[in-house]
Length: 207
Image 1 (cartoon, rainbow, N blue to C red):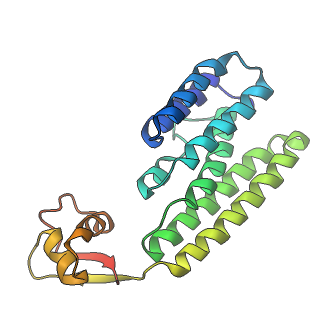
Image 2 (cartoon, rainbow, N blue to C red):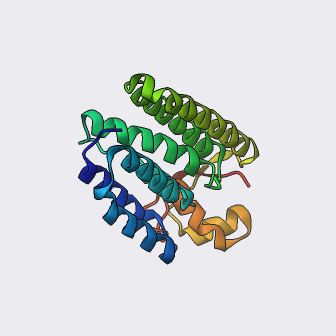
């Protein structure tokens, strides 16, 4: 993967800073990113993929999964390299999130599939040198989509909730589930800007 090393490493550094929570893992990734510019092209490509794997394996929440994307400003070989890494990262990360609802799991599966197609297309531009990478990415994407499908099958369906007035999320969580502690998931799924005043029409888990 020929690419602008600085752009790739800056992207990986941003992802690691916002996703990796383990202090030792973050220190290791930071040190490896600092040393990566001195690697030759082949070793750099391998190291970049390894760093993306570490980042993806640190994902536990939907918001972290959403952060893995190719920057809109990336072009040419740099974009192709990022597309390959993002496809692998999303395939790994998508299986690590405990998607709370079927729509969210299905949305993640769709994103993994699209990123996989994008990464495979980028690998295809490498010609014969990218044949093994193309096959591997295609396989990883297919496996991830199957696993996320299993998660979707076991996830709770979503219902539409309509209230006459805006209420605090804790009140609604107690009314819906008998558990005010589930207010956080209500806020996240509804996309509410504040837990104090929820929308009068929003999506929530059926159970």
